[in-house]
Length: 533
Image 1 (tube, one colour):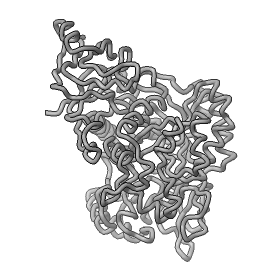
Image 2 (spheres, rainbow, N blue to C red):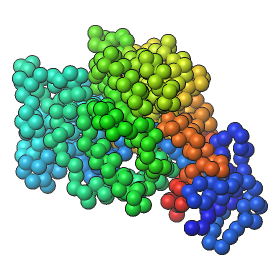
Image 3 (tube, helix red, strand yellow):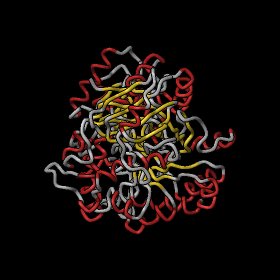
């Protein structure tokens, strides 16, 4: 196999020990040399693939630290309400799908959003019954923490007036106690076993399209985290599928998997430890849920939501979470804990503190996922405990109004405290949370650097970070979170030849335009997988 030569370039190594250079050589999937343009051109051999970049900048490829990649791929073959601007608009799409479906066939989809629809009350089964009278319908909200079902779906699942709320979940009911069709948090686990995965051909097509989308955005690797609080059969399918694709050479991005905590005993019994696997498919650890979400007002808070006595929902008790984290750590398995509210974040940090001796013994990369609201007293604890803040600044723009309404202006000053965390020396890793948000990394860069309101004024400007720090969080920070910092996130000899070329340097152009910089080439494992025409 020939070598890849990038010449007439500006190589941003993202390594303080290696200054910028003008060219590089990649072979056997790794960078073998970086240096002057003259030296690289002079080393040309027959069969080498040479790309003159005409002075463009080369960056390490993005590593998305928080995705639901397989669910995203499957969702490309299911009903999407991401673009629906009202309940009426969504119901039209649902009706169209139902009209094409066989009677009794499940209709599954996602993407409805109360905030975007400007609803003050939850939608109900009644409107779904009218749109799809002959089919059970189950639709996940944009954030995945609430599901909307029609009467046929409730009947198929067996949810009635007499069904109790599961621990950590809510079946929303009307004044008479009848289920309205909305399930929140762990209650959604009652439905998932009834929804079959799409046919194999649809899954393969979805994975192909999702991979191409990631590659065109410059994403070479992704952490795939469980989206279920119980058993996640789709994650099991995903692990098998990714391994099969790796065997035949069709897996186009590198994957690190985080299974639900539900699987902990099985994982221990199999002897799996974090880091097991290959450079393409690795086992990262387990995923726990400490609370819900801001949008569903189930994020667990230290003080009540504005104008209420409600403090959200602890999906799992602090003591149970600490026991799971300790057990996992003692068996060499890292934990990624979903924690959005400040109380949930504190509970997660307390659990990691109790498990720190075992975590340190195995060198585990313990992570808090989201960390959307952090009490100031807990900011230094991330660095002290060696806990990674895995954050998705792409959500900042959409959350400004929701945060200030739910948490109030003063508490919202501690929302998405990216700069505060970085200033302590804590590792911050960026991701997209796709399909909750679009996969495009530039949206997270924009959110972290600008935190723009609609008028472009920054929301809590003190938490804005530099473009350089934002790129570090989406490359080196994410590589550290996945435990591959020795071979990813930098462009130096010995590291993976995963890199991207921009049409203009996003660090040097005006910050308001940085999200306009376009990926014109993506290289993964030393191969050009995307080149903009």
